[in-house]
Length: 465
Image (cartoon, rainbow, N blue to C red; front, side):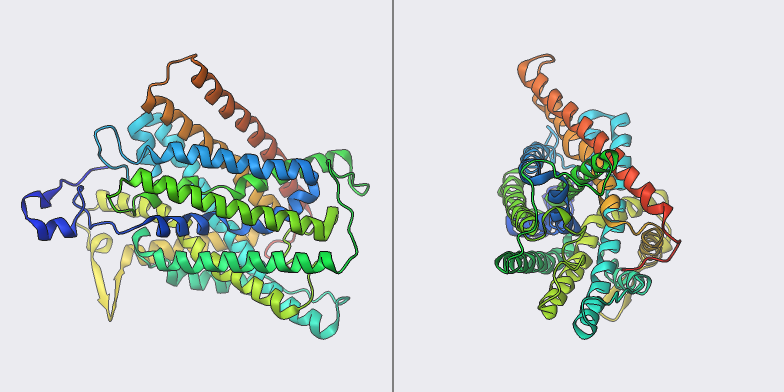
């Protein structure tokens, strides 16, 4: 990517206050805004499936994997923060550029495929989750009115379209730097629905019933050994998805002030973000498993293990929807920017591509309006065709966790630090990468089997909650 010259250097203090060392408008992000972005991206729809994951893995393996994925994600993200600036101190504005600067062109292309597959997949997953939560609000009121034995089923299509309409409006926010307020609201919502889930779980545990749980992998008589194995792999993919924010770490870091050094602030924000997220994951996953046992629903706020108080269940699902409205923008902004920057380079004289039109207090760019609206519509269409919550999340997590969260950060660290080949550090970093690759492949196999099984019984555009 072409770097702008620091044209303000000879313009005096006024310009110095307006622009950073790369000639771009001065960044204003802090550890607080970066932490909010991270929590918004991490504590997404993945937290809702963790109770089901524990139901497939049991207490020991489930808890261990939650901690292991958290530690690996934290470690590799710390490595990645060092890649925001190249050795000559120039900035890398996004993940792909960092890979290109450190590893070269071929791996840069591989990174682009993996990163944008993640961002597109996550945005589709958020669309599915939001529609299910919207439908759950209607079903909750129906259960309260007519009793728990009623099916109260409802089509998800109208909710998918409602979510898409709101995202078309929000997608006109021009870039990452304008998302801080949306991220803070989304972060508050994530804490709110996680807390509600924890509270409902505690209330269910206190109410007795004592559902069956297992220290080891649960024995499920209603499933064949093969199906049980695929569910275990799918659960691992869901946990990987729950920590899949590494793809936007460099973009978040690019919002930070230059002083103190961005990597120092980003390491603090990463530690805070992952620690807070993991704490909520442990609370939601473990307490949810204690409440529901081995028969935990795929989504513990919409699977209706909780019926009462119905108004609190409704508030929890409303918080999920509000959170995902913001999280969608956080994860998809790098993809929007990638396409738009390419268009700016390709057609620098085009008014359609470059001109901003003022409409009252708003500024509209035709390329941004049409391209982003089209993307939201296409993502919603895919969500209508493949509305399978657990298997879809697992597929995204399993296919992208290894390259983006493990492989590229480790390879860039080895290149930057000039780690000697076959040294102890080189060997254990490579071994970590290999183990994560094998786990990702197994999780991908499980999620694909889950998707195949779901598709066999699904009628096109007939998603029902």
